[in-house]
Image (cartoon, rainbow, N blue to C red; front, side):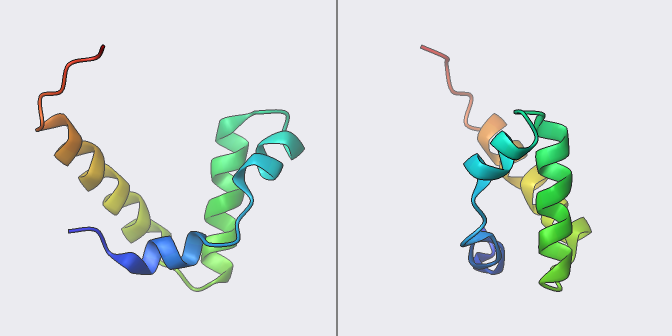
Length: 66
C-alpha cells in the first residue's frame, strides 16, 4: 500500500517548471526533487524504495501495452 506521506511531500513541487529549469534533463530534475524532499525531512532512501515497490506492483499486473 502506498504511503501518503510521499504524496503530501511532493505537493507543491512544480515538476514541469523544474524540468524546464534543467532543460528536460530528467536525472537533474530527479536529483533536485530528492534534494527538496530531503529539505522537508523525507527519508529519500525510503522514498526511492517506495517507487521501486510501486514499479514492482505494476509489473506484477502483467499489463499489455496498447
